[in-house]
Image (cartoon, rainbow, N blue to C red; front, side, top):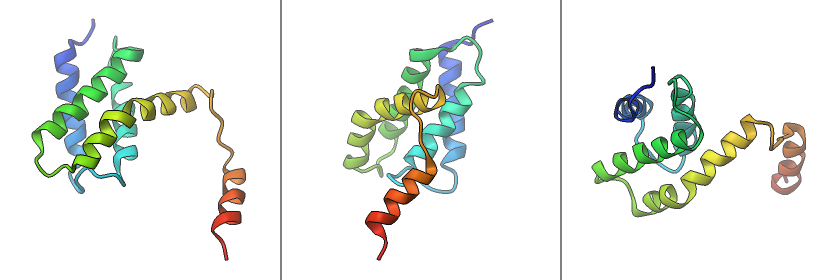
Length: 114
């Protein structure tokens, strides 16, 4: 049995509210929030691929439309970058993008250490 899209959106709004219960949405926590929503939507049956992405974007857009304290910069970030963030997380999950932590640490140390 498939879950109607409006029920999925309502449930994801609840997840978003829970994820943001301690700290409001900002540029520092947006990746964690996106990842949390992506993990949550995986539990819904018969919601697939682009539909998941569209629903997550819709949840974010409706959330920021309701909130007056969300900065214009954050709204623009969500509008233009959110789809690419979701695509990147999916690519990492499918192992289409490989991140080698040790290599990243070497590069970071090279540029940011004394």
